[in-house]
Structure formats: structure tokens, C-alpha cells
Length: 110
Image (cartoon, one colour):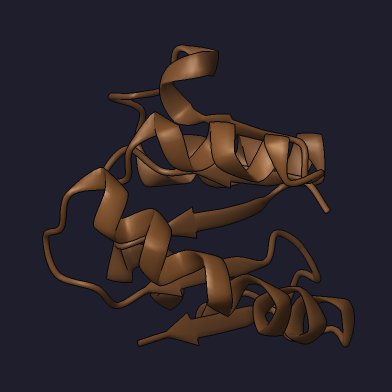
């Protein structure tokens, strides 16, 4: 599964996902760090990526869209250091992958 990590999350999350076998890019990797949500959405559609974000706007876009892609993983975690974020996210990834694999288009992670 391919992921696109949004700007409020560290590039380290994209690197970690890639190392775990899931091709991933951070929006900064594709010169979209300051891009609009709509531009990020359209890039995810073109590349077949699931957006990982802390931004509620992507959850709203996903709810309002009838299109099958992109999927959105909405991380509901407060500000945290990179190491803490990765430690929190790692055990959650298998369940996220199952949900996405079963066709869930919005995965809310708390």
C-alpha cells in the first residue's frame, strides 16, 4: 500500500513506512509542503496513495466524496515528538492496513 504523509507529520513517518515495506512520500518530498488540501488530494488520486494526516479537512473531504480514492488515515494524536509518534503508530499499522484492505476509505486512529 502506498502512502502520502501530510505536512503536519514528520518526514520520518514516510521513511519509516517505506522501510516497513509500504512505499511512502512526505508532501515535502514532492514539493507540496505548502500545497492546498485539494492539490494534495489530487496528487494522492493520481499516484494511488492513501493520505495520512492530522488535518480534519482530509477526513471531511473523504466523507463528502463519492470517489473511491484516495483513502485517508486521520491520526487523532496531539503534538508529539517524532520518536513518540512512531512508537504510537507502529502497533496500530496492522489494523490500519486491514481496514484499508477491506475497503474502508476513512480510518480514524485515536
